[in-house]
Length: 197
Ligand code: HEM
Image (tube, rainbow, N blue to C red; front, side):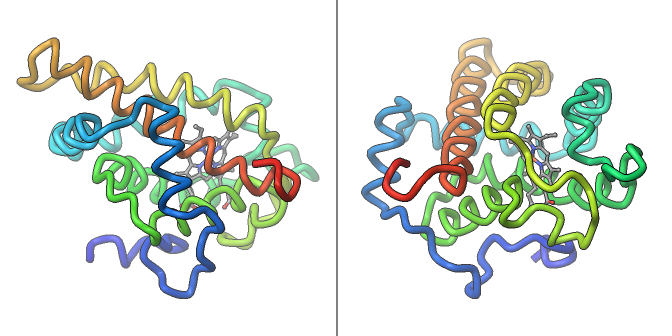
């Protein structure tokens, strides 16, 4: 597995606690999002197109976060106000793998458990622990949801660059946007009161 070398990456780790969501809960959520089999096909096509553009995509996203002080703050040590370089780098590696995982579109129990863990890692329940850093302790849920927009919009040029028709690009872009929103929604679960999600 090429991913085994990414520190802190745990998709498929059998020791992760299972998600409280069932496969039926996930199916219902996909229906609400208009996410269907055609989206799975489109994402897997996108996988081929984005796999050798990961660093360029990450440059765009990190550029945005780095230029947006209230977002960059979450990578900073509150004592010094300075970004924690090693933290930015460690998260970047997992973020790159996440792009590929999102395009693999294998929505099984292991994937659901991993979504729960990524949610915790944005929340004070789990933030900073993976990398042992003393950055801001918690990311506001509103920003997790808001970031769906830039992460969706900025993907389009990367999907358009190769030999896909305009129609295929639209389909891949719509599927990508739904898949990002699906995950951001799942990541909000640790933020909600028992029974409210
Ligand atoms: C749609 C919204 C978002 C997406 C797709 C996203 C994606 C990711 C991914 C894939 C990881 C790596 C998880 C891991 O493997 O450990 C991660 C972690 C992280 N993200 Fe996000 N994120 C989103 C929202 C945000 C926002 C709004 C911020 C604020 C700057 C943020 C900051 C971070 C930080 C600091 C970590 C590391 C957390 C830790 O300490 O483990 N993310 N994010």
